[in-house]
Each structure stands twice: as structure tokens, then as C-alpha cells.
Length: 169
Image (cartoon, rainbow, N blue to C red):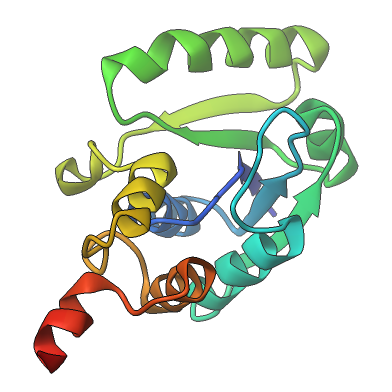
């Protein structure tokens, strides 16, 4: 069974992330979406909230499971017996950083490959950071995130998102 890990902070998971997950699910027997605990970031959602959101939006994909991890990704990949790590590249600017990570991971464990996947063109501009900022400012993010994520964002920011508010006026 070929296993791939798709790591990330997923704060929150976006349609761009979901696109990469769906592509990975077609290419691999088993996809583990690994939500990272990163002490260097101040996430909007807790680690468990992020893991649960990813699980909810991927529940229809039979070969996808969700987990969380702390520490080195390559150690986690080894522990889960992964063949590869999949990373999404939105733009050329992502490549340099991702390339460096792939090289260091290869140095730490040559048995685990890194595969780069570009999301659909419609998602190349999309990031969790942008989604949070738009939502914080009252903008409509319904085209950028799955419905469970939209509802979670609304709860975090304490108000219905802008499109629904306009519909009620």
C-alpha cells in the first residue's frame, strides 16, 4: 500500500488544500493529512479543531485519514511508514522554501520522497492567512473554504459571514 503524508497547519483548511488532498487520493492508496503543531505560529484554531475540520471535509474520501503531529515531519513519516510527502505549490515563490525542505528531508531519510503538486489555477492565490483576514474584516469567504470551515470561521469571529448578512437585509 502506497502511503503519502500531506502535512500543514491547515489554519483553516481551504478549497486549495482540499484540491491537493483529492489529487493525492487519486494517486495513492492511503493519504494521511497531518495537521502540524507549530509552536512558532499563533493559530486561530486549536490543533484539535484543525484536525476535526480536516476530518469533516475529507470524510467522503475513503482512503484519506486525518492525524496531528508534533516534531520533525520526517520522523512522523517514518513512524507512519509513508512512501512520500506531498506539498502544494501555489506560486514560484513557494518553490524555494519547499525545495529546501524537500532536500533536508531527503538528507534525513532518503526513503521518503517529496512530491510537489500544483493546485487548480482557481486556487493559486488562496492561503489560510488571506481567508482569515478577509473573514476577520467581514468579507465573504464562502468560495474559498468548505461549508464546515465557513461555519467554524463565523463562530470564531462571532458573526455570520458578509454574504449571508447582506441577504437578510
